[in-house]
Length: 137
Image (cartoon, rainbow, N blue to C red; front, side, top):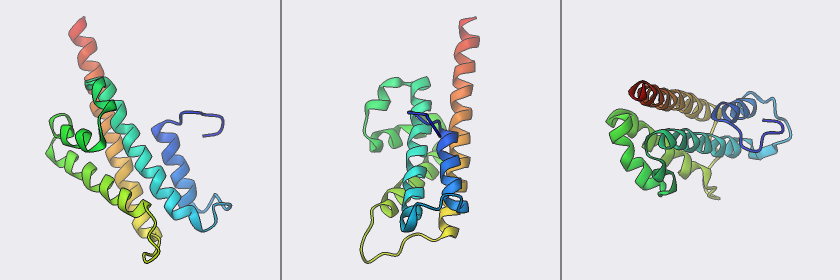
């Protein structure tokens, strides 16, 4: 991510992986919550990329509206997985004094799910681009 003002989905995932693997040592006790926020941003960015291909106006809508619209483009199962993950990351990202920080096993699961969903969204976006290019030919 060095030097990049707008990191890609994959650069964000690489940063989260560095936090999870312990490569980043100067994050102190904040590394777990930082990982959560990076994963949430990654998921949102992956959705934004799909929206730019499918219907750019959705990028200006609330996340709730985007998640509701996702059923049409990604299918009910993928949409439900994205909604559940986004809600989890949102809840966990907001620190509560009475809650423990997430543990590595949880973070690794959310990381793996984010990678899978980002890959699915990228494939949908690529398919849409391909469809539009072949439709114009």
